[in-house]
Structure formats: structure tokens, C-alpha cells
Length: 205
Image: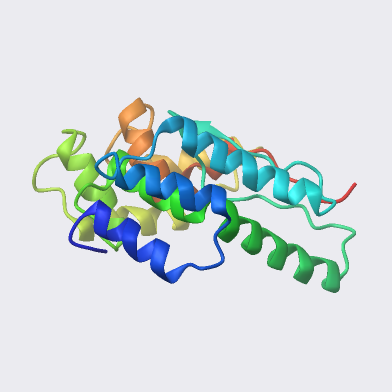
């Protein structure tokens, strides 16, 4: 992504003019702190995103912390919403994210689990697993991708709930999803593998 986290922050500040001043100030504080986003600023940024959507007339979005990091996915129930309402929702979600949280979240995730600044999330995830000795040193990106393919191809017709289905699918991976550090590596780089832990958000009552 960049030569350093600080360089990445400078790039975000330069090229994302649509950021709210609150997010800009958090990034500037990180620059003065060797590229580190404080957890307090991280939580505040996500809270500002949440309030942005509430101010636009939506119900509070569901948000789930895993070992201090939010699942970067949203499960949305759009039943009863017209196509125009769904289009507006997508624009509002994207707008609130870009304005209040996206850049701070980007840097925080780099700090937590991607110090190598890998732009490919598969590479970053495998590097995280290796660095924390959660997989053998010869565990490769290709092996991870093969396991991911099995994850999606697993037959879950005998399960009754989404949680059961995801639990069964995760057996395709050769590392233990139940350790806190593994969950952190996954959440920061491919949180879709943990989306069953997120409650569904119904934007409009």
C-alpha cells in the first residue's frame, strides 16, 4: 500500500477530500504518534458513522466488535424497501463510511494485523497467521485460497441456522478459528468469514 503507515496516512489525507474534520484530525494525531490510531479514536470514528446513518433517518446499524475490531461487513434486511430506497441506502452507507470512518479503519487494521502493508487481504491474512504461529511456516496463500474455496463449497444443507452453517464451513480451514488472535487476523482482513456473528440490520422500521 505504501512505504510506511505514515506514508499511507498522508496519501489518505491528500486524496480523500470528502473526509469529515473529525476523521482528518484522528489521522493527523496518528501521524504524530508514529502512525498509530488510538483505540479510543477508532471507536469514536465508528460511533460517528453510526450517528451519521441515524441522522439520515435509519435505525442504528448493527456493529460487532471482535477482540477490539469491528466486523467490516453489514448484514442488511432490505425487505419492504423499494429499489429507490435501497439505492439511497447504499449511497448513504458509502457516504457515511467515507466521511467518518473508512480511512481511520484502514489505518487501524494495518496497525493491528497488517504491519507489512500488504494490499492483498489474502496475503495479509496469511502473514498475520504465520507471524503469530497459528499455521506452519510453509502455510501458503494458495493453501489459504484452496481452503477458502472449500469453505464456500461446503454442503450445509443439514444445518438449521446460519451460525451452524458457518461453523461447519469454517472446518475447511486448517487453523483454529476459536483463538482470539486467529479471530483478529480474520476479522481485520476477511471479516466475511465471521459475518454469522453479526446481527441483521433492518434500516427502516
